[in-house]
Length: 173
Ligand code: CTP
Ligand code: MG
Image (cartoon, rainbow, N blue to C red; front, side, top):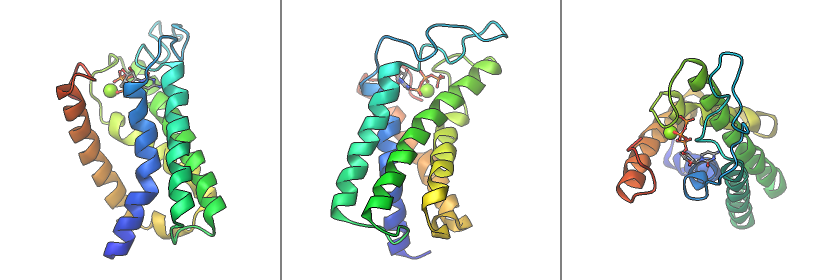
């Protein structure tokens, strides 16, 4: 994996990071699960997932994806239009993956806001799944995947720590 691939992978995953980060700042009041509980008596998703956060994340990822696609087309993509569609799909995948991670956390009894390995990984997994139909397989070589997962884990952990210090998040994860 050369330096150009690394730079392309960073640009490739940037809209996904934006989608994942925006809800922390633009969280709303209405809960994505309408405050309802699942069969097990626990909340479906919990108070950490709001409707506004969900759509603000998707919107933010699409805007950033549009800006990137206006200026450059990565070698993973056939053209700017396919790239933009992929960024949009990945933004949707990010927020669905994020909510799905919360769903799984609630099922195993982890409270909202408490850290869990899925916090860093589920949104990335689902975002990448959503990209599969549109992309050449370079991104899905094991080196690229390892790079994306390791970088995401480090950045996610670091950014949550900073968000906590800035008072945006009450806990440092
Ligand atoms: N957020 C939101 N809507 C979303 C996702 C996140 O409003 N769809 C906001 C919430 O204020 C949330 C914060 O972003 O508390 C941090 O997101 P995250 O870490 O994903 O949620 P947690 O509160 O940790 O809850 P969970 O344990 O369910 O992940
Ligand atoms: Mg969290």
